[in-house]
Image 1 (cartoon, rainbow, N blue to C red):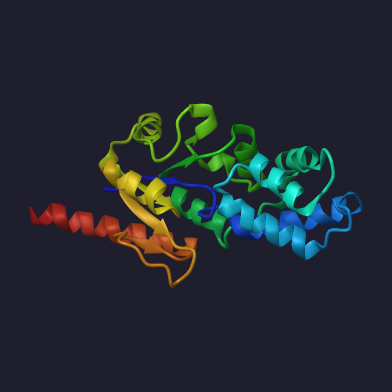
Image 2 (image 1 turned 90 degrees about the vertical axis):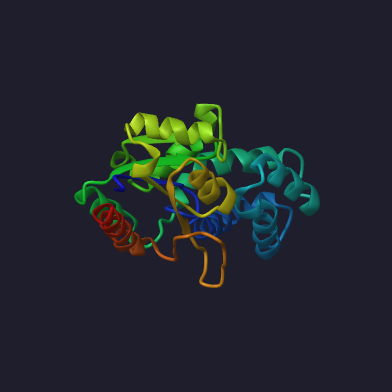
Length: 230
């Protein structure tokens, strides 16, 4: 029986693509006078390309952005600091986020979260979404000194939640870091798809967070039937 649901953060609970678009547009307008007449389209589109959906370090993103667009001396450091200090104000959740988490808690599931990234930055974003208190444990790779897909971070989450692998399901958007890593640990895994066209070998997937409670119910019903048939 599944008793614990452990989540990824970016592109699973936090709509990171929408949040980045929201943030980078506002950053441009806040710094427009210091950007040497660079157009909004050039600034925002190139940042999005260099960002690689969050998998490229932001200091490198801003360094290359400043070089390509000739932003001026010191602008990469200023924009990078602003990203770390201000992104939390532009966080956009996926539709139904709080409602889904509250429903899972009402259904007696224990909730956890594992995310890669900078400790303060990710915690700021979690708190900005207003979901910090919903989780029994939160593990951030910088704080833990280990990151997904390393099995150690999954083991720590299960230990802190006092749950065995067979009682846990992991929900995430990345096939290697989330789905495959969780399955290797003996957990169930649910892939959070970015769009309907995405295909994978994942056993379970959802397009919208609001589909999750029903899927968990199906998985537990299937497990109950399996136990009764033995």
